[in-house]
Image 1 (cartoon, rainbow, N blue to C red):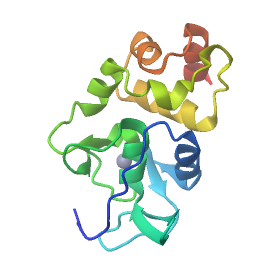
Image 2 (image 1 turned 90 degrees about the vertical axis):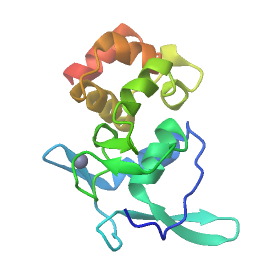
Image 3 (image 1 turned 30 degrees about the vertical axis):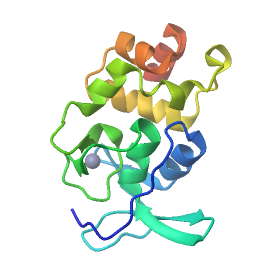
Image 4 (image 1 turned 60 degrees about the vertical axis):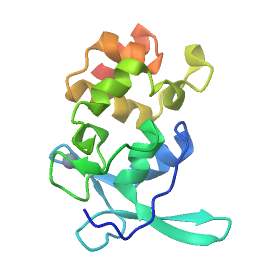
Length: 160
Ligand SMILES: [Zn+2]
């Protein structure tokens, strides 16, 4: 993976950024392909406005940090599709079980619940994440535990 783009330390739980990233993707054979510009190597890039000006970052890395926080290693692709930002296709360095691990530890809770889980509106971004977790083999119970969503919300989203 190319190393010349800076890494933005994103605070997990930025649902606005998650929504924005996902709005720039198109599903192709299970991959969520980045529709904006890409850099050498084909990785999606995202310009982010910072106090000292605009800088660009890896789209898949931003998506990862929005869900899980900074990775221990590099964010890599199971699918070998550098445009892809589907969290089910990404893994942290050598830790291919990272997503399951994150779900088990409830690290996705802050992203999805935002403090009022009973009235949580299931946005398309949240719905995509639930479906992605499901596709990666998570049970409904695991998804409920990771997201804090009710059984009804999870089952409704999985069937939609
Ligand atoms: Zn993919």
